[in-house]
Length: 340
Image 1 (cartoon, rainbow, N blue to C red):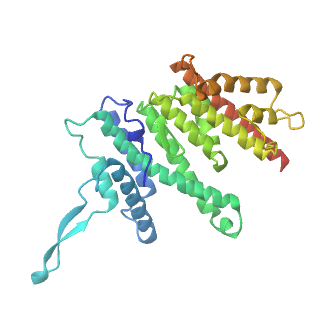
Image 2 (tube, rainbow, N blue to C red):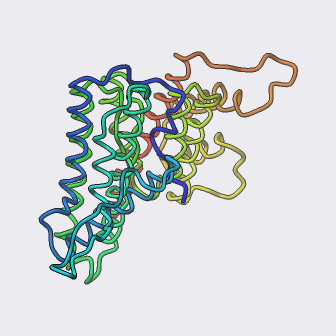
């Protein structure tokens, strides 16, 4: 199974230059966040089985992406039995121990610091993504309602909150260590400046974590990844995320008629007087965004020079799309809430 991991997404982007006390301390703290979910040692019965399953899955996914069968030495020798029945047996270590031994192993003298840190953080990302997926499944169960949801609601809410607290702690650890990263919705990505992150990106990722916005979330993650790695079309994917938002809202508000031809048509749908969702000036600004960003990047230039945004224009395009999506989703939620 293919797993999207941090160290391959940012393989060509240098993020770390030193491995000193600060970096080592942060690595340790991040691992203990996963251990708090599934300590394994000291657990019994179903709790220990759950922890064993969690660490086995983390190991399988990470080892596969690293191209290894085992992250570290998986077996040990131990003497069992008494007297003439005494013998040596080979036993497998628990997966949490295999993961921890690899995670905490000293960096080889000739190993690259950047790659070493990225691979360790990859383990944290894979583990957190498992908890994110479980939290999302729990949210869906609670939302559906019914007798089963009523029975498990309290326990599920506690586990969801535990995940949210863990995600917040990871981001706090990153900020304290000056790691240029932010965790959201199962992924580590490079963080923009703190003001943009606090006012735009963090609220954005929280809003689009709902299943209805899945395609918006995926396209914007692609935009951010391409921006951070010098990709060719980051602004194009940001515009795709914005267009998906318009299409979803138009459909949910029963404004879609089936004859739309591009983003401009969906903007018109949301600007109708009987709907009162977008003001005239908002419609004009949105259409200008697609004309200048999406259309130029999404169509062949023919004999004209190839359109290319500067680094600053690309950041503006992504942050602008995030701001529009944030506003549109919040307005949609408010409108939907008032109609219930």
